[in-house]
Structure formats: C-alpha cells, structure tokens
Image (cartoon, rainbow, N blue to C red):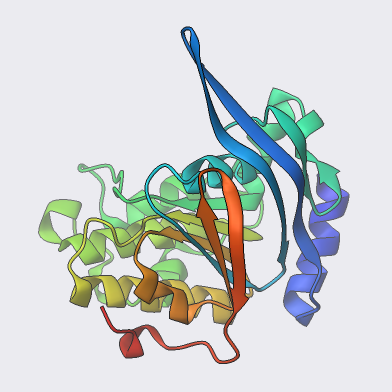
Length: 250
C-alpha cells in the first residue's frame, strides 16, 4: 500500500483529481441459512481525491454494504474494488488491516467513544498507532472543539461527541473518510453542526469523503449524489454548486 498511498497523498495535496476508488461489477451475497440475500447486484463507481459524495437511498438499498466493502470491513462476493491502484478484493487480511488502520477514517451513527477518557485521550487512541498523525489538539480544533479537550463524553452533547468521533477519524490523516449516517441520531440543528465539521475536513484536508444518508436534504452539500435502490445504482447526479450545511433545508 505504501507506494500507492504516497502517490495519492501527493494528489490530495495538489488537488489533482486522482481515482481513489474504482469499483467494477461489485456484488455481495449474504447466505442466511437456506436463503441468499443479494445486497449488491453489480455496482460501478469511481471516487476522486478531494471529492465529497453522498450515497442516498432507503434502508436495505445496499449503502452500508458498499461502504463497508470500500472500507475493508467486509469482502465482496464478486467484482473488483481498487484503492489507488491496489486491488482490495485480492488483499490478504493483514493488508486489509493495514489499509483500515492507516488509510481510512470511519464515522458511524453511534460515537463509540471510551467513557473514561477525555476528548483529547479518545483521539490519542488513534494517533498513537498512526504513521503520520495530527496532534489530537489540532484534530479537535478542526471540528470546533478546541475548548473541550479535557471534557469526558458524559459532559458533552451528542453533537459534540460525534465531532470527537470525526476528530478521531481524521487524526490519522486518512486519504478517505467514510461516514455511515453520521447525523442519524441527532436533531437537525445539531446535525448541521456535524455536517459543517465534515465539510470543513473535506475542504481543508482534501480528504475524499463518502456520507451515507437516507435524508435527501443532505445531498445538496455533495459534489456528487449516488442514488441506490435494491443493490443497484439507479441515478447519479452532480451539484454545480455545493450548498453549505447551514443552507440545507431539513
């Protein structure tokens, strides 16, 4: 992964549109006893460096399955996924572990913070094992929590906890940020603050960002919107101008 990662880091910093992901004919079948569930039915997709993409669709459309395969958390049944030229579908478990650890940041609907650690310490859990990390203080400052470094999760609101989770994800300086319903557990006002943090990370760090949502209003902040239904991409659209999160209508 190292050669590809170095090449991609250059593209990210220069703003050149380099394919981070290339997905061809991707399928995923889950065996449920005597029943087979086809979660993905042949997905073709590319993601460029610095791009912000929203995956939109109802529950069961395949959004999370696709995100998990992109992030190396799950494996495909068929097709191919390449990350900066590296074939993830042929990667060993060791290679996938290194890929997840050093190249991808994850943000989920639930924050998964360690209650006994402060905001700074929750982020440091990741920076201590990363190759080229940010300072925890810098990561937290980027999401607007510079004044909350030494607060514990129980002392923070849900939106603040989610922003700690974002800071933790970006603190490893990942090329890719994958977000699964990051505002799903939040009210609209708090959700906008979280989306502002994601937008700022994408804009200032050039991190290729994918956001899963079923909320069609969030699509306005993306460069590109990919609509999924029943395991297929049914529509792709581009926004000529990206809206700021505060301008979205919820």
